[in-house]
Image 1 (cartoon, rainbow, N blue to C red):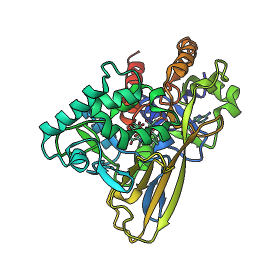
Image 2 (image 1 turned 180 degrees about the vertical axis):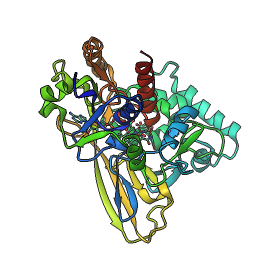
Image 3 (image 1 turned 90 degrees about the vertical axis):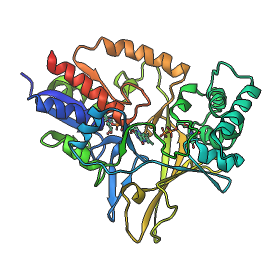
Image 4 (image 1 turned 135 degrees about the horizontal axis):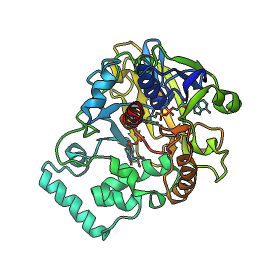
Length: 368
Ligand code: FAD
Ligand code: UDP
């Protein structure tokens, strides 16, 4: 008889939801995290009353009432709607691509004219079956929007030419012929009132958690403590990189406190010109409608990733997918280990998808 039913490596959303659900089912869980705090990438640091999204801006959105009700059972969400702007060479455009964007770009007020303009550009490009991100983007919005608002941002974000990137990355973005600046199409969205840590603390309430514990520093002993291991760290690291590294894109954040009540008047501005080295500027107080006399901003610089750095965005190109398949073949044969979350599945997951995956897994386990 082992001390715990589950050892959960990682206290991000996957690990926290898993721990909550299995604890509710009467199982004993131990959660460890190598970071000094819980929450994984949704962690916020409260600085002078402003919740600073330490690992990049996080906006919760979902179409699922079940997921929305689930997160709201731990913390109430506010009515924040994500409507970022794009700054291209000092001019501001609305995102996602919608009639406000097209009006600013071409002075076109009419949806039919905007559709025709874009359709003409798509036809002129001659692209029928897009095979890469550049082609996919042009067939969604035409060449003008691609050149101003996508190419520069994408190439610095990913450190690769848009023609060398998988087309799936850009399919996330809505294109609309209405004057609607809501970045997401989902029915529900918002920010936890009081910040994401309240969601994580609710999920982990009553669960034993140890932070600053790296699984790989004491793998054998930790593994012996529980019947089942739930692993949410990097999949390739679990197998000692035997098929090579799964590659990521990393980020560097530059944070500043400024003595003005509002620096940019909106939570996020994307800088879409390739010359400016950062991709976006985040002004954290706007996520929670802060009324402070000061503000905190973060400039987000994409950077090349190498082993030992924080892994942010998986690069799901052909080479990495090949390696992923090899690792997955091993993972599928593990009897006492569950792999979940964005690092262990090497997936460009949003928060609601990670929660849904953990809920699905735990539901299945409760039934068996
Ligand atoms: P993580 O949050 O990464 O948690 C994994 C945890 O495991 C970490 O805490 C890590 O320290 C720990 N760990 C790893 N290895 C070990 C080890 N060896 N020992 C112990 N602990 C270990 N999603 C949205 O829905 N909306 C957004 O606006 C949004 N914005 C994003 C912005 C950025 C810049 C990024 C990178 C992601 C964004 N996401 C967003 C995605 C979101 O962050 C993820 O879907 C979610 O946080 C993933 O949860 P997770 O538990 O899978 O992973
Ligand atoms: N993108 C872009 N310009 C923008 C915003 C996004 O070209 O102003 C592209 C870019 O390739 C990015 C992808 O769309 O990687 C997905 O954007 P999203 O905002 O979903 O990125 P994330 O939230 O994952 O950082």
